[in-house]
Length: 487
Image 1 (tube, rainbow, N blue to C red):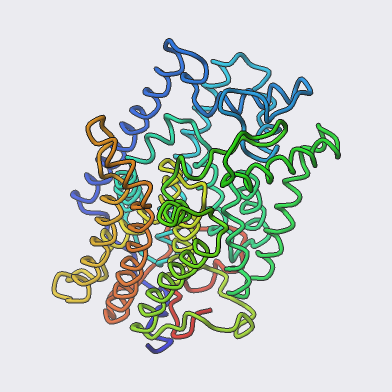
Image 2 (cartoon, one colour; image 1 turned 180 degrees about the vertical axis):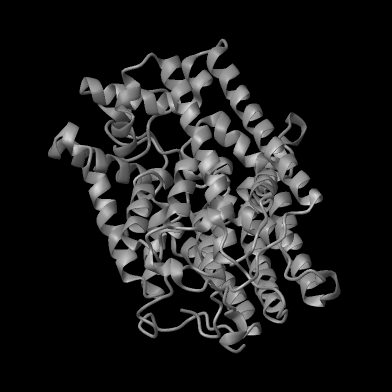
């Protein structure tokens, strides 16, 4: 593929007003999103204010609240609660103000924060897909893409809200990392470092950033991870904070060790009892620990197969997947189509191979599902139905979204299918489907970019939602950023 074939500047005459059908689609999407938020919020509100024990009413939030209350009283945060607090001390430290409130009031504040986090995640996921793909959207594209992306993941967003977990914080960390990756790499590192002190997964961005020559963002991620980890020392003191950090890391390391967890150590649930990850699958199949040579070899072979499939997709479209990070020391200031795809792939890889991954964790795939919706809703050109590449792209993307939806939704969570669900999760069915859908989505995105490059009448333009005042890069023509040699 020639370099210029994928770089089309954004000079375009003023756009006509959106058609009535487009405006109606936008109104319907906004209405669907509002109804979804009411549905999610009402379910959690009824649980919190209804009868039951605190750990059943408030689920994981009860563990966070108990840890913060223990920190406030100078007690062990890893001995508080029912199931136990399993994170580094940062989250309990940040929630100290909530520990001053009664449990119900604190839970309702947390619910409001979770709904706000979901709204921001939807908005930023849609905006980043539009910006990175350099699409000229009408006003309906962002809400419709957000609504469709959320609908694909509704089976995971609902348990995320019901269980009151922290996966939406992780999602915001991923999305802000992408949003600031080129324009403000230090802020991107700070966002990723925050996520690393919740569920560790964003640390996997460091080798990717180094491989792509984004050294400032990689260094910022490492430094900010340490800074976030040490921040609770302002309340706890240096020695107590270090003991809590050691307890968090020891609990994670012992998740594959049978037996009770000692006092002062995070009570991380054992790997063989819960999760949809590939490490659990390999552990079940081999009957050995996750750190055994057999399990590690199987995981390495699976990772090699995944990257080999992606390399083949890159090769089919004339893209270089593995290049020296010093080949282009100044990457583009705006992440383009390939960078967006790789960020989605990074999240998918982290979830599939993360040993702690369970069903609600898959709500972090919202960027992936919104990307798929954007590719389906914004085809290149007015007469796109005549372009065979557009039909091919839609087929690949629909296949990716269909496999992902079925893989994370089926078998249904019912009493009659409980055994089937358990078997599917032990064999990491959702993770296998996730990796497969990532490869198919990559194929669809490359075909979409090729279809766009061959339509001279289709130009992208800046959208008000994507404007960033004060940045020198904003004056530059926006592109799809899909050169023949990846940055």
